[in-house]
Length: 611
Image (cartoon, rainbow, N blue to C red; front, top):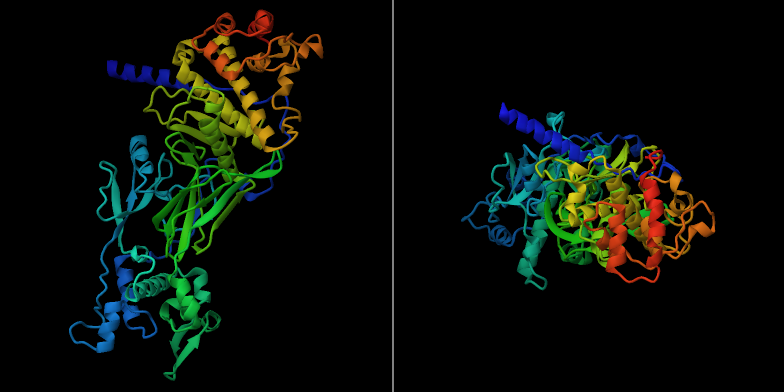
């Protein structure tokens, strides 16, 4: 009985802590951003993607052996060098069907079934596993927020898939099953300038993989480039184009590929052997300033034939990435919105990481992604803001680090306030920060609003790391606590957002009514304010709003900076403490006017009408 009561108390305390919510919703002035018209806007945050029927897996041991046998019996195909000698010499030592190229298991295709958040974190953070929540042989039909296997509907998890080397030790304790033994060719191990005999292996690998793809109906657009051999009813061998195959109602899987065509001669042969560099750009349209910016430092994975991760990269400030070179002809790309160990953007729910998995294979071509609407645009905005905070803001302004392994849940359609959630009970499956694209008024935020909101919530996280006691459950419901924490985060948001967008575009005008970001907060009397006072900006700028309207606060203080204001706030539980430490810690020519300035904050503290 005592054990039950303790558990109950634990969860009461936990959810009381979770209940701390940031109401930074700009309810005074609605955003001017229009909702885009597109199918994705109709998908709720909890909606799941639907998959097309699975295709065959080309690289199973069984299929690769079938492909090898087809190569050995195809006079037009490139042979493994030893096999070529065997066929030419007609040796009786080995049978042609057996060949000399070993089709052995190089990788396992496995499916994980995590049972709790600890097991989930264990596999998704394993860079060798590089798990996917969608089977590699599947293609998404409808892009929902996340994908969940139909077998697991009603639970918090889905299955996760990985292709791993045979000698890799899988995480202990996480349930899994092996789907298939796989074989991948090793063309990338053959160096540049290799002898002709080694380069002949590249030709063989190319043809072997092509046949493996054909047998499982995975040729995609390549089937249109190939020619096929067909023996008609008269026993005459014909050469057919893909158009011929279709017009006769034939299936490519049943035909022999003609590898003797021009595509395999001269320059084309050189093209097949040469290496190329997977690359691309990932950008997002900033609607607040009508320009594109790069999605900075997202992680990109490049999968060989869509299965095996062979290359990794990070985008630069312009969203460009490139990897080391490969001979793999076709790859699939995927982008992950995180920057470990700092933060991970979550796909609107606890257990799904935000990602953009491309479903097309790219034949020696770069990947171009430009987000103009939808969830991926939201993920990109939140990622850029979080990365900017971690990599630039905390160092430029001298702010405390918000902590590593931050989980930021990006909500697309839910109308709700954004939140900073002090995750003091690490075992609870919670995101520490929630960013809602739509506020309480259900209006979508502009790109600058999403940037500002992310900065605001990360400023709370920095504050909590500096002074955990300020976010204690024992301060729940304290107006003074709310005023100090929210005014500080609002100030960081205001300064940082204006500085960022001033650097991006001249004459920046915010998406919430024009003017500077949050400038409207200084244009009101104390009795019209709530906990989001402009005190931090008033301590920094040289603008005295009282000179414009007598009812607005008298602001004859200027010249402080965010680092000084933060240090003075550290450990304070009252407005008087904050003011006193600013006076004691720093020399400022205008410090004699601090009490006059902080008087309006004290007035707001005692004003309950707007809270």
